Length: 172
Image (cartoon, rainbow, N blue to C red; front, side):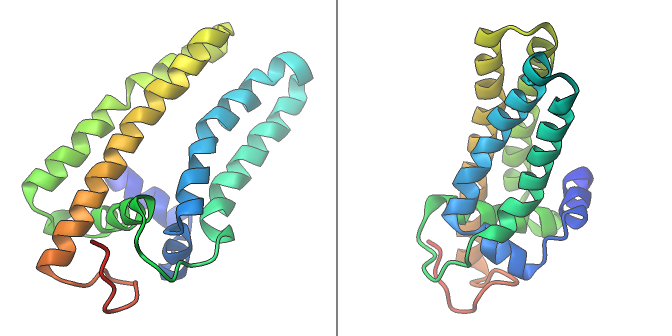
């Protein structure tokens, strides 16, 4: 949990950045990161040392993505609610009920095999298993986002306001 919060701070995610990242286009295009990461690493076969440039471009996209999309006016999309729930989870973890913290950790542990498999198959260059590794790493993240929607909806029912977001907005 502390690692995720540190990463959030390192990325400089202010209220404005979170509001932009809550745009569903930002959330859905972030799904491109794992395949792009795999492609950039696989690129060492085709472009040799220039693959480091491709890796750098993916890292730039990771930082740039939450900032490039306009803030949403309507707060009605599943991905948007997942991103805002993730913000609550990162910033107010200790204030959340234990069942929410527990259910968010399970997909986190479930995501461990994906990067391990992906790292191995990118090392040995097995294309079929690269796809499997990407899927194995991405599916638990989607489950995690679903849990974040649950956190947001419960938070709003209890408190009614998501810090840093416009007041009076109903996300449910």
